[in-house]
Length: 436
Image (cartoon, rainbow, N blue to C red; front, side):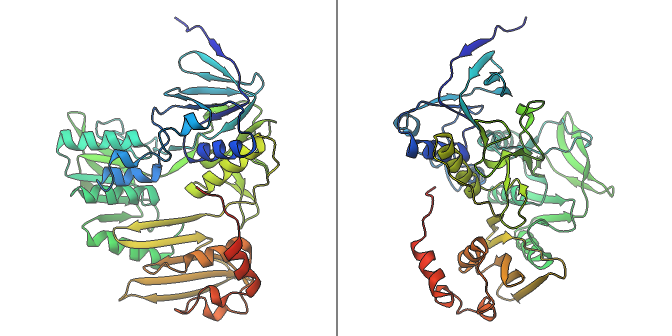
């Protein structure tokens, strides 16, 4: 029997999603409009939480009391009506309605879509429906994985994917004393952001704690016994025994909610300089949005937490009527790989005659620094082992500062704020920021 659709009347501000971009939006709205009602709709039942902490939760480095991203009274003190555990099925911008699985039609005036990304699960792997196959992008994922480990005495796990999500799940599993194997399709782990030297250092760090790494291959079949995972067959026919599989190939923008609407998409939801979509009054922010990229000048999704918060904050300001331009995002990641501290930012590969690469590598100390220049400006960098100058370099990239006068100092131990032009040093010290 078809459910009867009920209608929930509109509020001035509706936010679809409950992660960091949504919280940024609430903050942005309230800085402009202290009283206008805000409704927040989210599939998950949790108070807003920090997704990067799920690997630390699984690994036992934090407990569940550390997961919330804001205090328990965050919604109440900011006049937010949270509709948690409500799953949206479709956004209809023409009718200004969000349809849900429980038969509600939630009307909106201005809408922010901040539903993040969905985990990628390859469709052609035989046996992928076996018990013991998981993804790893949410608090519920961490809980399900922990429960399965406890109930099935899991001692070997195969992680499919050698990117950031994969390596964070590896670190958590290693903390639990589990033997882990990583399977990566590319010729090296972290291939999107790390060159060969950096990747080799990361791989060595993993292997030092007993992780097996298989690159240049992928899983074609998950072997089962009594419907439970018992191994993974690789493309070359090799079998890796295990009792659990974690797919951590990556995420893609969750744009299914707006399929066949007037909202334009590419890889993600296309937004303008004010984070508004092609439909007036509808905005997008975070991993689902395809916004301006500082380096390329085009638009692309940049699925990192600081960018998501900033986009949400600026979208919120614009929703509340204060015109605020989004200046663009920059890809950057900071990750600890089994004790090896790493930071990568911007165009880290620098492939082509238009680039100049400065690099230093101390194998004994496990320290690697790489600066990628285009003309007299830095466009990318990698820091491994010694990361204390990464913030300064990131600032130079973001602000497009020419470095020809001090290029020879960039990789030296003495390089610091004092090395920079006087006017830029003043900007760094006094520049405004958005609190997260």
